[in-house]
Amino acid sequence: KRHFLCAALAIVLVLLFSAHALSYHRVDQTGSTKKQRLMYTPVPKKSRGIFYGPSHLANLLEPRGYIRTDNEEDAEYVWVHKPSKIKQKQLKPWQRANHLPNSYPLSEKGAFVETMMEYGARTGKNARFVPETYRLYNKKDRQRFIDRLAEGGMDESWVSKRPHVDGGKGVKFLGPNSKELHVFAKSLQSDPNFGGKSHSSSARLIIQKYVNGLLPYHGRKFDLRVYCLVASSVPLVVFYHDGTLRISLSKYDENNFSSQQVHLTNWSAQKSAQGTKDNADEARASFKDLASYLEEYVSQNPRVSHIKDPISHVRGQIKDALATVAHIYRDLSFSVNVKNHGRKMCSAENGFAFLGADFMVDSDLKVWITEMQSGPGLSHDSETTRENFAIVLPGIFEVLKEVRAREMSGELISEMESPNTWELIYKDNFRFTYSGGNGGS
Image 1: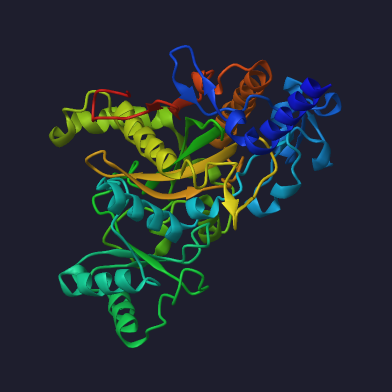
Image 2: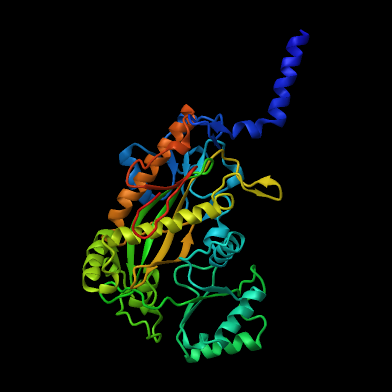
């Protein structure tokens, strides 16, 4: 009896004091320690394959055996547009929602820049794909920008942004020595509150150097909307997928700032300017279209003729950049275990996130990130986006299905490879890198 009591007490002590440490460490065949739970809560039979989400997601998933529900509490997968709609603390351990609990530092433009700057200061490794940026609500940044204007910055182009809004709202383009730039500079000097007083101010602004020498697409400005999938949070496994080109409907002239629409590429801004949504197909193009265009561009421009595979060159830089973002944010916005005031923000045992990222391409085929989005729209206005999402979205659930199978079988999630058109860019002991022509490593 004494031996039985001692054994029971030992089990209780292990559960109370060592559960967290034991439940997050696995050892693979090479003897390397990996982070993964020893056990996951099984999905109740009645909830398997059930998802809560928008109707156009249902149109793609239901033919593949998934069932849509109007009750998110019964759903194995929960998919909503805005992170605030996820009740993170009310999620059941077996539920998986498409937003992780701390997306703000990633998707808020000012917080994103701040996080990337802090990483550069801490490691000495600057993110070369982020344009020159200043937070006007930060005293040091504000003064740096004022000094920058005094040292020739008035002769350059800038973009002012409200970092907490999307859809092209709150964006102003300031041409070199323009009336708008002079008014902006004067406001900075005369009004200490201009641009916001803190990171929580509703009037806060960031300002970025306008990337000159952008590559136009058939004479019009474009950027690339690509996708990133955090397939598993613990352990962290991240994939990449091509998206589409977002194209302005106006002829591009980088020196013409009389029309904002020339420089905006998102569909909501284009639709508003044109007053119709009938020309949505003109505002999108595929990566296949881009590949053909880049081949022709490289063949006609000696400056970039050394780039033998231009679409892979562009894609490689993007994947490298997103792998860097994953590395920086792994314990901040990509973790289901993140805490607020010492308490976990989410009650699920694992999670996933479907993220958007926007990149510009300059005439040297260098890429520049403009923002990350924690809730990219599932626009299906154009044939190009419909075709893209018909591959992207079902592919996500194929990946999630494998993650779940590994949770239940005890196989290491970190040993996943690219299962379909989603390409692996980050996991334990692997981070995609691109050196300019040698691919990933």
